[in-house]
Length: 102
Image (cartoon, rainbow, N blue to C red; front, side, top):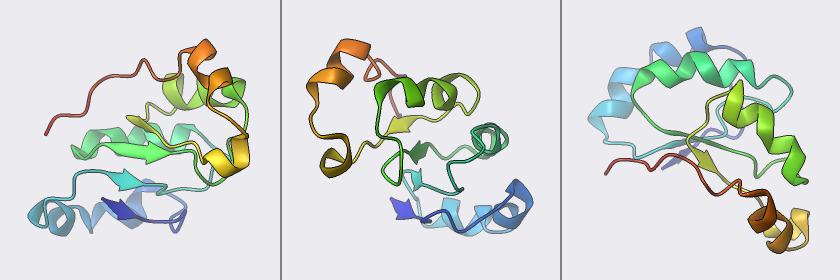
């Protein structure tokens, strides 16, 4: 896993790094973009590395929907210290996401 901590603002900034990420066998890329535009994550979906997001600001189950539909993230990463508890997330079934190969 590589935590990018929202360091990039578009796909082109990451594109040149992809060969190195693949060579290092990065299992997933965490938080490559700020959470203000879920569609940024969709373009990165082509890179062949699973994408995680959420621990830096998604605090309610409803906020995740755009990241699964528009953003196409692979891994939900809620921060338990921000969301308060896991039961609301279990009820919303955000955990029903596609498995990550590996």
